Image 1 (tube, helix red, strand yellow):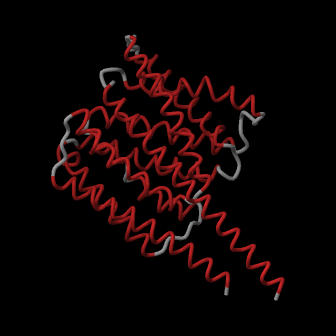
Image 2: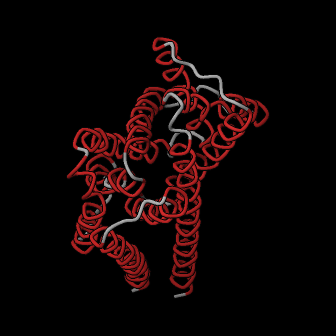
Image 3: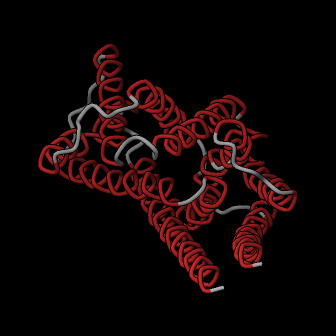
Length: 310
């Protein structure tokens, strides 16, 4: 009986430890979401600059700072799962190109909403590639959230077909990128993942910019804003990667929908982009889904603890 009590106490301790890690993972994702939202405002503001130039400057702080940190910490620079690191970086690069393009030609609400269809793809991809089980309640929640995102993006679907197609492709690539990051948690440090993403994005952006020959020399204000975007992007990438290392994809991915709310708010505040009633209803659906996802995830954790204690 004493051994059973010790075993039970140990299991409860481990479960509480997992729950703490999951909560930190959610916090990391919320921070990442805020940073990504600030970044999209900057991209919208700098839309007069070449797209590849914006992406290049976005990664300059990562290219400069992260290798120094890796060297000081004694972390293996090239990583362990190099093929997946490179593949995930390519997914991320082309998803960023698609996303930034939609930001420059569409309203923030529509662009962000289309990108945030990615959790719908993450739900499927996490089940296929990561073996993460999904119950019926979670499926219904994600479908409702997906419908909410469609309602918000409705103006984009009606008026801007080509950017919408690009955005949808970017959403799929974003899903693949997130799954890659989730898989890499088992083999590589978050800074190694960020380093691969920064160098891949920066190199591809530089090559395309050089090929296009349309580099624009920014003034002091634009240069400072570009550098700020790079710093915010670094924080976003680190917290985003850390979130997927601490918690399952099906738990943290839904919090990416917060970008739609931030996008709507920033669109109104900075660019006078007012959403219609359908968009507002879509935002409401997403908020409700976020709450339901948190509640059901908490219930699953409690039920798991109760079953192990029997």
